[in-house]
Structures are given as structure tokens and as C-alpha cells.
Length: 124
Image 1 (cartoon, rainbow, N blue to C red):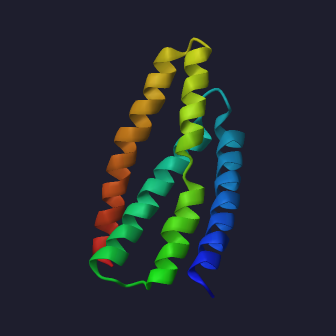
Image 2: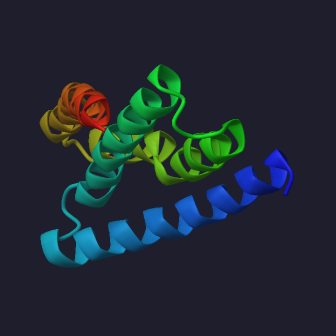
């Protein structure tokens, strides 16, 4: 199977997974804050950190599988464009403090969770 086809399949799976996770989170946490996108972004940061550690440092996965997972799946799963839109909507709605909380949580917690993913990958 060509690498491009693997990226396409990974992207399709990442998109469906992003939607499913967001729906589950919004059903349980509500929609007054972009919790679904936050959970997806943090999960994606962890996953791509883990995969980067496993594939770049020890080459445990071939280039096609890496492209499938990191470019295809993670690229479609993480939703920073949605993050920006939802943050802009919070600001537009006069919820500037909530927008700031969303930015800080996404960026700072995302980096921390990314590092945890790298550390977890180092244990493999």
C-alpha cells in the first residue's frame, strides 16, 4: 500500500476519532466551554509526543506506519484550527477570560502532556 494511501486512511480514522471523542466529552461535560476540543488536543499532543519518541529515537516503526499514525491519524485528530475558532467565538461572545483560560490550558497543558508522551515512549 502506498504511503499516500496510508496517510489518507489514517486521516479518515483520525477525523472520525476526533468527532467521536468530542461528542462523548460534550455529552458528559456540556458545551459551555470547548471541553471536547481541549480533550482532543491534549490527547493528540500526548499521542504525537509518544509516537515521536518511539519512532524518531528508536525507529521502532517503519516510515509508512509513522506516516499513517503521525501525519494521517494525528494530523486529522488534533483540532487546533477548531481551537482557534472556538477561542475567537468566546472572545466575540464577551468571554475573554474563558478564551484566555482555553489558550493557556491548551498550550501549557498540551506541552506538559506532550512531554509525558515522550517520557512514556522512552519507557517502551
